[in-house]
Image 1 (cartoon, helix red, strand yellow):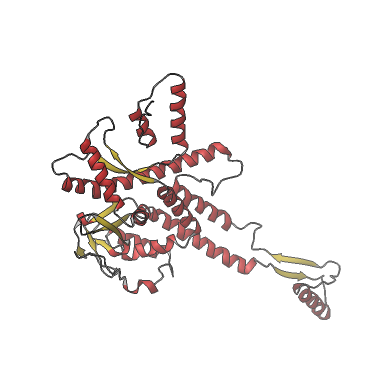
Image 2 (cartoon, one colour; image 1 turned 120 degrees about the vertical axis):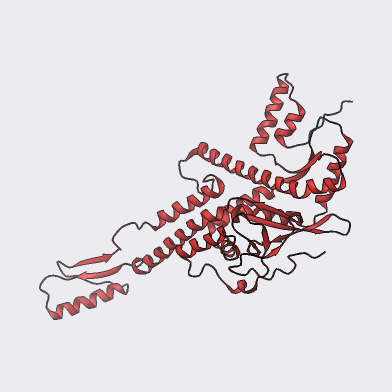
Length: 382
């Protein structure tokens, strides 16, 4: 079988830095090209941007880590039905996912679609008819005719191409979503422009210019003497100033330049956009545990949303077609999902169940299993 992305030759891009000479006009042009379906230059820029800003890199890594920390499992649609076919399908799907040798790497790449707007994995098949690898196909290799056109492969990642090689969608796992990088790129550019202005400010005013104001009516000889004293002071020496002399420092017209506050504000906007809250990386003094808890809850909701979204993509691209092929005429009775870890919310559900049982109340095991994400079985007596 011929695989469409076998060499990943993107031509000259290895020697091209898309951040060089970036300005707002260039950024707008890149984003507009993406709306037309020309993604090569835009995605190459996003790739560089994500690795060039400490805050953007941090929020991406934090969301990715939350996803990759989860286990995965195959669950049966209805825990109440003792259906041998459902268990057979579940065992089959576990074998399918266990057979994928780069599954963690593939999920990590699929996650990049949340920031770049889309991500593709190509299914590579084993001789036995199961998927043995999910090959990441980087975003700059893709093109489409307009915003809603069919995905096509742009071999060589050539700039300006609006058409490419037709693909078979069933051979790919595709995630499409709103691109967070579209928001982050504007913040990134403004932040870097502010940093550039700050660097220029420091190069002029970082070491304040010093001027000696001599006493009135000084003759030429005294002015030369004062000039020598001033040069001695500038060379870290010490000197005597006559009566009515003064020293003036050029500080740039203000005690506190605005650059730090602006960059801090932009970092906050980046974090809010990507994680739903300021979290601990930007915790404010005196904010209290209540605000911190609210931010963490927002982040956990986004992390859970990431897991549910990716699980849905995998279910539609792997579970549904393979179950239809190997269990023809049978409804899907099992499905893949990411299993949550024992986070605060899960711990509280378990504790509530224990407290209710102590109080003499009984919780439906199926409902408890759904809330916690764990497969529960009754303990056998005897």
